[in-house]
Length: 484
Image (tube, rainbow, N blue to C red; front, side, top):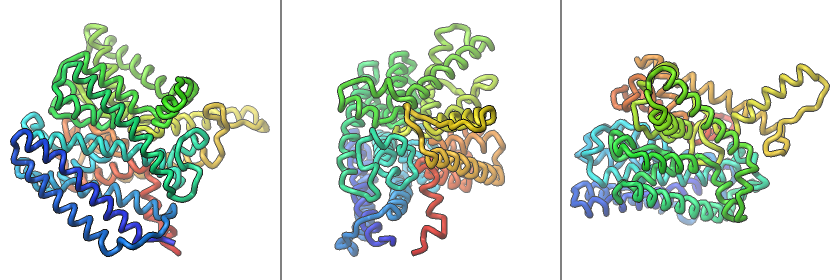
């Protein structure tokens, strides 16, 4: 039985809390003497009112939420806050953007996609720049809690593979108070990484504002920057090294970070097969990219090829989307290779997007198992991760996820092509948003400003689908879900 009233009450509470996110940008605006500060105060009042109107009639409702209610709440949370986040962007006269563009930018921020429709970032008010970065930082924390504490309860998250080792209420079938304990532990890690990243950026040469702003989007694997040229604006090896280090950390399973700190040992890192596969993908792709740069003559010196190759492999493979160069103009197969890396994405329970490393690992192992079965048809061959047998239900769920992913990708790509986009642009735009990557190829290489409004709304839906791992959204479209 669905408890829609309690779900609506909680959504009102979340919207009310989200209104508080307008206050830090307002404070930044007042600090720098910008009129944009008043826009954020208007947005704060409007969102506070909307949340109160939704909450007030239902504040006495105290029904315990079940897994089915969780599906609705999670989807409404991301969709509702994504649209609500567009409020200050739409109201600000200095931007003069349509509601479609404002919603696209907001959803891109909150889902840590990093695709943008804005240009002239160097000249925008600091309050607006802070808000974009802050959106991604908030979204990144929401992703961690979603992946580690929420989605496993709904039976759609990749974290089912780590039930025995992950902190939190993963083995429960209800939304219990232990989620708060899990979220609190993850907050500490997330805050710690953000603070360390900000200090590292500051030491490497950024001013305080840029250091904090970029730490938000580095740890969140978001990719928004305060400059049109992204990290390339600074032209600093030290800053790029800091970005690489924290992008790699942000793309790792935060449950592993927790275990390492909780047990005061590095063993969880060493023993995790997904992490080894993740680092192997990054290393192999780097060798390939650097080697082709030198072989093709695109880079004259090994140091230059290594610098550009490592940065963009890590940035795109983790689905961050930072850039120091126009990688979409690189020669040969390199741009397409980088886009394909985003399909793998980060580890389960990370702020990264994509299909997740563990799913790709399971698909490969299942493929190898089928080959072995052809050779030894009567042998009992299991698929193992971290030395433990993966249940058939999990393996089947991975295949189901892949099928749904391909189906959604094809439908969205065809929709974009029907609206007038060319094949390369349509393919990369869907890849960039469904994988929560950000930058694309073709017309969306520099930004997404020039594409039509219909395509932008399709891509907004793609961002939501990618962030909620597809099934969370698709299940709401099933008639069976709504039957008593």
